[in-house]
Amino acid sequence: MSSEEGAPLVLVSNRGPVTFQEGGEVKRGGGGLVTALTGLASHRDAIWIASAMTEQDIAVTEEHGGRPFVAELPDGGSYKVRLVASDPGAYDRFYNVFANPMLWFIQHYLWDLSNAPDIRREEVEAFEFGYNVVNEDLARAVLEEIEGQSEPVVMVHDYHLYTLPGLIRRERPDVFLHHFVHIPWTQPDAWRVLPTKIRTEIYEGLLANDIVGFHTRSYRRNFLQCCRDLMDLEVDFERGVVHCPDGHEVWVRAYPLPIDAEQTRAVAKRPRTAEFEGELLRRRREHLILRVDRADLSKNVLRGFTAFDVFLEQHPEFRERVTFVAQLMPSRTDVPEYAEYLERIEAVVAVVNHRHGTPDWMPIHLKLRDDLEEAVAAYKNYDLLLVNAMFDGMNLVAKEGPLVNERAGVSILSENTGAHEELGEFALSVNPFDIQELADSIHAALTMPREERERRLDGLKRIVTQRNPGDWIDDQLADIRKKERANDG
Ligand code: F6P
Image (cartoon, rainbow, N blue to C red; front, side, top):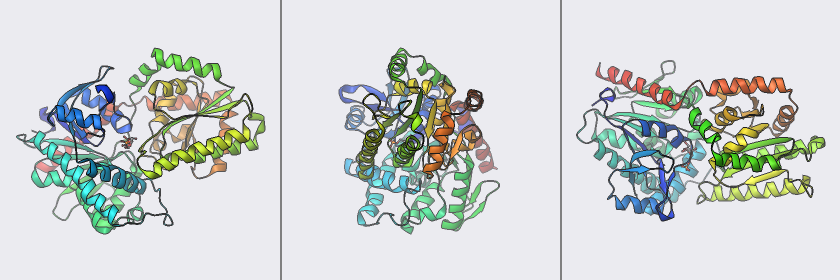
């Protein structure tokens, strides 16, 4: 059963489309990966296999005896899911010791050589008895779901599941494996932090795929370079092909993820969004600077606040005329680096507010929460959207903000985000490490003539509405069909 014969698509990722709350309430999973796949999973015949990430997820998984079930969301979405509950200790090692601190840090250049992690038994065991265990658990569920199908298609997602494709391929040589990596792929030397054995297992797992996809051409190039330099394989940069010694070819492709403009516009019209807007407008000053992010080290939140501090210092005429709203969603708080980062964020905000604030003006409003309507209300009303990530796979905020903005808002965009490949022309590009450049860009944005701001915003709106997540999936399915034919021929 190939991709052409209408077999249910099998999607597998760590975070799934739904998560369960205390009292059984169902909530949509967060993040770019879920946003990317939900359209596909609710409109096509697909089964989505994912980890049970919370205690409530585990309870629901047990209620269903580990079998697939249909999860209905309050906003109408419905998904066929199969949640997999791994051993809690193994899951903790997988998520909190290996996937997030280790792989996420490597793939966002969050270490330099002076602060690279010590690799001790704990880290090696986190790979062997955490990362690999969860990959095996999910692989087993995939194998059960594709049993009896011939030539099934499995779409694997992200950095949590690099060893899973190898496990599936071993049992089912006929399977078509397509793996999309939602985060950057760094240059070869960044990967040398990992012990050779672990690194090799990761690359061998990935090279069991038929296609490996990334958001940008530069991640694709980096991956090909890694395969050549770290794995000593023959690669074709032009065609994007890795030649494995057994004759297997892996196609390496770039598929930049678009936003779901229709859905974001619908959120912009919700009554709850209007309530947040009312509140925002009552309190707004002449200029509103906005950032919306997960509280993640890669997002470069601290340098953003420091640049704002420098801007207020160098342009005191803006004091009391500008407010910086930062909506940050606490994330991965069981990882010590993340918990500490949140504390540092709060400390820097307190310093800047203390230094510049007045009895009736607080320069930075820090909102530590994940609220889509509140974010979209702010998207509609910013004068400046700040996206200054050190490195970021894509960054959907950079696309969603301009889509619904109604104030000719300017975007400051880090040149190290995936979104920059598409949007750089109409944003103010910044080197995210250059605080002075960032402060100057804040000034440039807030003093830019309206006509120029409109020209830039129109350009951004045009680009972000050109394609939708359906097109993104269709491009990948078209390549799957091409590669299936190439494999057969
Ligand atoms: O691809 C990165 C990603 O998996 C996205 O889904 C999202 O940006 C984020 O990471 C979510 O992380 P987590 O699942 O750890 O909350």
